[in-house]
Image: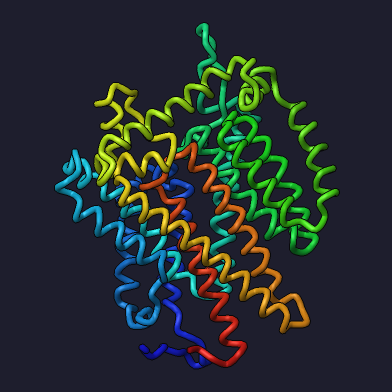
Amino acid sequence: MKPVHMNYNGAPETVSTFCFVMYIYFLIDFFLHLSARIPPYALIRPTLLLVIIISLSLILQRQKLSTFSGGLPFKSIKILFAYLVISLPLVEWPGSVVQNLALLVKAIVFLFFTALIIDTEKRLKVFLFVFVSCQVFRAIEPLFLNLTSGYWGDKTYLGSGEFANRLAGAPSDVVNPNGLGFVIVTAIPFLHYLLWGAKWKSKVLYIAILPAIMYALLLTMSRGAMVAFLVVVWMVFKNSKHKLSLVIVGLLSAVVMWGVLNDVQKDRYLSLVSSDTQGAKTVDGRWQGMVNEFSLGAERPIVGHGLGTTGEAKFNSGMKRQAAHNLYAELLIEIGIIGFIIFIIYIVSIYNIFIANQNLISKQSKLKTNSEYDFYNRLNLALTTVFWMYVVYSINYYGLSVYYWYLFGGLTIAFGRVLQGKSKFEQGSYD
């Protein structure tokens, strides 16, 4: 067994403060799209520059990280990347794969950076504050523009030459209405468990933020995001000790939200459950599109068409050239059944960390007379809720070369690492 490097307190060494600060800045730069807000700043290619700086910093500190393996999530993604290289001669468009590898690497760095750099409780809390704050800002900014200047950002075709406005990300953001809905439903579980379960000032902040971002969610008219929100609601209800109160609050909130919608917005959301609506045709079209995507994946079932080639594959099969509307279909289309299995193993390995974390939290909580592990318990509930929301939302969203599953995996690993470190430190043992 390799020796564990310790600091003067007897705890494992952490990466440098410089590396941590650079990563936090990287998160702000990435999520708030500073390059779009400050045009001259874009000339230095800040995202690429920050990735290089952080990577070099970690390499220089590799001795501190020599005992950290990252477990099965790390191994799964490394195997996936190796598989993509090995299968390159066998895919339909190897040239496109080479071009698209950069996008995958840009997404995967979130897994490794988060897991390796977020290595203390304080850093974990700072990371969560920055990450959630960025998502809330991305939701509030377009809503503010909508209320003050009539901004919408996107629209949807209703038929007969009619269009309806949909709220998308702010002009400097890159998300469409579905993407904005995804941002909002990602933030809600963290807000609920980390703010509502804390002190009264946090509860006041939660009450101030939630109605605003929920209204923004409604204005996106994203049916997929609304389904994801219902998953969050179910998970919160399932884990709550005050189910009756939640039911009452939920019903009252639903009445209020329904009251602020116009007829077009109501019709769109009703199309999820009723075929007697104008929006039902687009729901049927979306489901048929998913069926077609799975059929496309079956054309090259072993290794797929190639990373990032969904648009090409759909176009060459007579479909509209666009990204996949289903992560699971995207996996089959681009990396085949072998890659599909590897990625699903990665997702399952993340879930297994939640189980291990909860077992450790329960064990340690029994040994403590105070609420020392309350934060860890609430965070594990938030992460578990986000996990199941992602699983469901991925039915309606692509993601193989997008950051969210990788950042989430890195956060899960980092959380488990911090939790285990706390437990071992209290026991005076770092085995």
